[in-house]
Image (cartoon, rainbow, N blue to C red; front, side):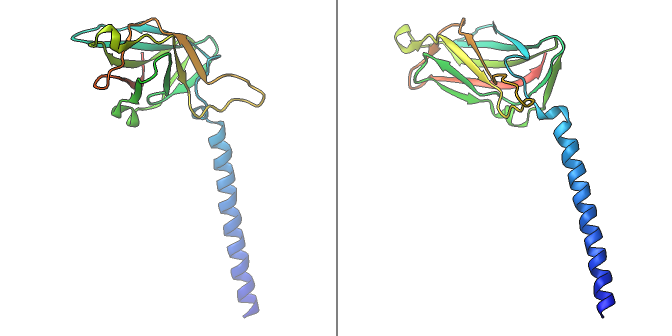
Length: 176
């Protein structure tokens, strides 16, 4: 019975070692794949381009352009915050939850739609001074100090800041 026990222990040990080797190899491969990084302020040029307004609705596109020699990923509706727009709520469009990963490189572009209303009177509107877009989950090479936040002056129309109209909706990033 002792030799049977030893053979079973040896087989179990070899199987465990094989599983560990596969897990280690898979982990090493996954960490080197391009999907492990997000665009940072140092990798893209970012602008805000006005969309076509209509019936009190306002639109703008955040345009991300990969700098020469850079490649990075964007996914979903990136977090957006406004400076000087207290009381305005920012929400992700529900379609952003299932948005595919968008990879841009060497001058390629991706866009993200911002939507808000402009129906209130001037006394119930705010004019942000800037907008900050953040790439969550940024992993950069050791020692890289790239900032995942991109801050731009807000050069668009005011945002409604009334109880019934005070929301900016952020759409998913899409390839341009």
